[in-house]
Structures are given as structure tokens and as C-alpha cells.
Length: 142
Image (cartoon, rainbow, N blue to C red; front, side):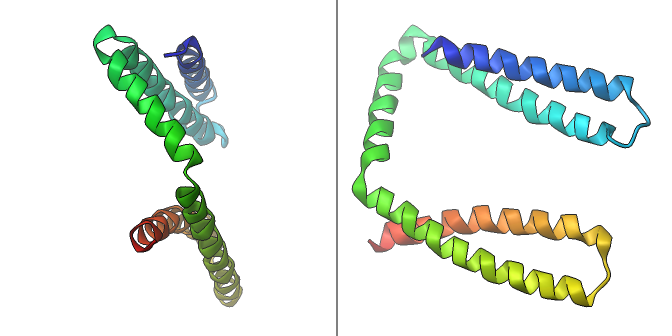
């Protein structure tokens, strides 16, 4: 396992702590909720990076790590999987454009400003989950 993973993990955790301190110091300001979100958003991946680094750096996991790297290289260059990723991306892009058009129409009918962020978040979750489902569908079909 490369040392970059260790340093990146420590950097992410440090940024998470900085944002947590900013959140605590600026308590009561309007932007503080963003700082708390950034704190969690940096700390959690940092912890995961450190866990992966220490897990895969153990001598007993060396063979499994080499196998994992080998499989990742094969999957990254497999032409069939590349084609499936492209098809699923195109299908989800088209669906997203249609949903965005319908969303714009619905929001123009209703004056619900507080729901805009919620609807956009739902759209994002829909796009990510839908892309994964479409990929799985084409993976079975082809």
C-alpha cells in the first residue's frame, strides 16, 4: 500500500478537524451548518483511508492486496465493462435531462422555495442509484 493513502487520510482528518473547530468557534452564524457538513465530509473518508492503509499494509493481507490490484487493473481495461459504463451513463444522462425539464415545470407551477434543495438532492440520489441499476441491467443482458 502506498504512503499516499496514509498522508491523504491524515490530511482529510486534519481538514475535518479544522472545519469542526470553525463550526465550534462560529456558533450562531448562518454558515456554521456548512462547516459541520464539511467536517463530517472530510473526516469520514479520512478514517476510511487510514483503515484501508493499515488493513492492506499488514503482511498477512499482502497476497489478497496483490490480487485486488490485479483485478482492479483487469476491470479498468475490460472493453465490455467500458462499453456498459458508457451505455449506462448515456441512458442516465437522457433520463436526467427529462427529469430536470419536468422538475423545472413543476417548480414553476408551485412557489415552494424551501423544497428546491430537497428536490435537487432527490434528483442526485436518483441519478446515482439509477446509473448503478442500469449498469447492473446491462451487465446481465450483455
